[in-house]
Length: 330
Ligand SMILES: NC(=O)c1ccc[n+]([C@@H]2O[C@H](COP(=O)([O-])OP(=O)(O)OC[C@H]3O[C@@H](n4cnc5c(N)ncnc54)[C@H](O)[C@@H]3O)[C@@H](O)[C@H]2O)c1
Image (tube, rainbow, N blue to C red; front, side, top):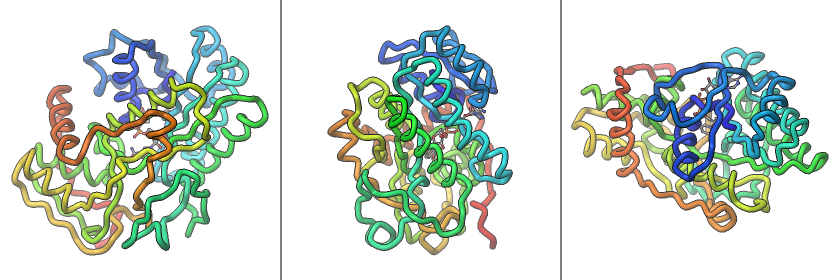
């Protein structure tokens, strides 16, 4: 069962699981088929919320679900902290409880580097030392609603693993790039904005971030990592880093967009941070995911951009020009 299965990652995961021969059921309050309309008859869908513990326990039991991949997320920017934390924190606890009641053995949680806080010192700019998988959830400068939710969710999963023996695995994703992100994640999806503006023949002006680097992972690699975590034999850790294992600058990414999509003007302003969450870029050490889950990223910047465009065109997704900045003033 994929909670949040109609989202950017969920849709890619549906395809990857079907390709690997699994049966899939999605749980999502929306029945938005824009990212999966070509395979809609190959999996089951249930409209519902992760918050409904009783109903979901019944669903899990009735459908004899053996693994949950939890990627439901709402208002990631935390504009409405109550609604955001309800789904992004309490919603994970709710699915853990539904899993316990229905005796589902494993829940793979789509976490984020945001669970770790900010990357300062050796892990931040300009050194970007590879972030080890055992890096502790560190202090946050300011309280980011999304980070709070990811931390609470991971800690809840660890509690359920300790207390009830549930296999809980958190995958901490680097910055994900994938079709559908611009529509769903708005101006924070800087990479998607560059690609989709270029598909529409327009350039992009990114106010900040030309001096920074980040680990950027293509959504199909993310889906592969989740399949690995869902299907491998007893993962020995409760948290893994999932990234590309490489640093990419926005300038390098923009060059790939110009090479493979359209020769439009892309300007990138100064500074290190390209979204208004300071020090949120890092390089992930993915060696544990490689060795213990069998994860192996397949996409570099060029192949990710090429596949992104082919997917947008293949699905008939219209690209609209987005000139919004990432919440930055000026
Ligand atoms: N996109 C990224 O860059 C990124 C990076 C790190 C981690 N993640 C994590 O990966 C996961 C998937 O992200 P995404 O990019 O696919 O997000 P998305 O917004 O594209 O998809 C999330 C899905 O969750 C669904 N949802 C919302 N409320 C729900 C509820 N109450 N019950 C069930 N489903 C609900 C939405 O309808 C949507 O289809 C999230 O946990 C996110 O935090 C994403």
